[in-house]
Image 1: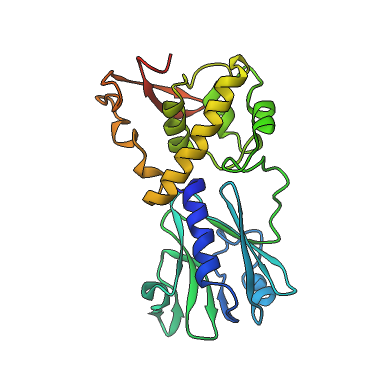
Image 2: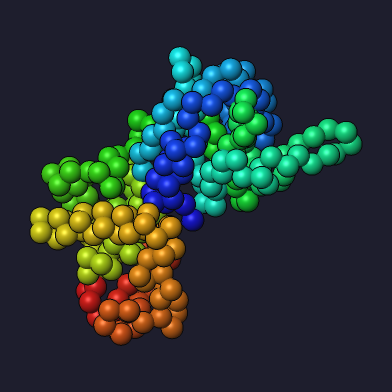
Length: 260
């Protein structure tokens, strides 16, 4: 599922292949993905403009336009950005009316014949004008040491829930949390305020390292423990059984020997 690494890859793709191209048509007919906008509202705001910069904070994406609104994008749980992918440009005829394939929820068409689409099988992504980012905490890959200590090392809730709270730090999802906590040898059930500064610094480093490796490898599903997140899984580092429980409302795995 998309987390910070997937969002960063999408941002980089938009920056590399989507900027500076004139928008001549917009398919914003999916009223759920484009809520609260009515059909045609995003089109009216974007046609004739160009995307000029691409940005990310946590899992949130947005692109500025030339003297126009900001286009906010969210990948949801299964979405991705595709640019000039042929499947996104193949219209399907329905009684004489043309529409995009079922998984392409929002599409920009460019004057050069190309396009950019939010492809989302589960329909949980979003496209919105001028998104409100005020509730997001600092980006998990960029937050400095003092801010991380101050924000994460407090509260009686479990550590995993704390680092997944997008208002505390933004970008860490279920898989990245398990990977980073395993790398840091920290029990996901520990109260967040019980960590000392050294443990918090180690966790910050491992979140950053796990994020970099996931971007390089192609996503959070490539983490070292992902294949071991199962009932009969064993720790790839020491061979101990992987423990399993629900922590912060999410299915969680950790090494029963090293994360204690």
